[in-house]
Length: 262
View 1 (spheres, rainbow, N blue to C red):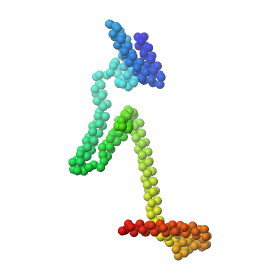
View 2: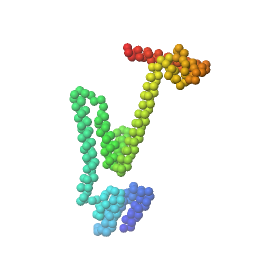
View 3: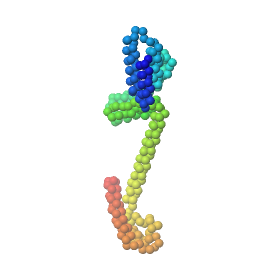
View 4: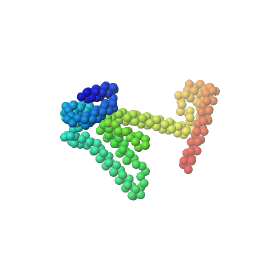
């Protein structure tokens, strides 16, 4: 009894030390060893001592979640089969469905090979694996994380937590997708604007800017601003440079169009 009290106090101290489960389990193992030594030495062991120790270890197993809470001592036996079946069924069902989907994908690939069609990819099989990892298992409270080299990590957590993380991840992916589409649309708009600009003859480059210019020379270069005043030499030089640049761009556009028609 003195040994039992010391071990029991040591387990309590370990759990008070930031829930040092490892030390608590090691102490319980030592207690079980002490019981075996006691049984070998004593021809008529004290049943009260053994029952107290057994009840304590059973209680600690219940605290750790190893066995369900019960009034009996030791591991449950009468209802364990039915309970295990109820607990395992969702996981077995998920595994069976996964196996069926893999079988269908494999049969499709095999059918293509027999008909001389080489499959371009195995997206169907990969999608089945992703579905199990990202949809089915989180709803069962299982986190499956892939690692390099074919390794993986399995963790049992709250389904609510895993589902919430999944929704957050989906929202982030959707946000990234929308941002990608936005940039793609902007790039397409710029490309279309650039193409439209290339198709403008240099003589028409400024004629539509009636809010800036009112008169033009034979080339289409502005000579007077919107108020009828003659534009400065500096602005004329700047506009001429832009005109010459557009002339080169327009010439390249005509050449590319001719090549395309050919």
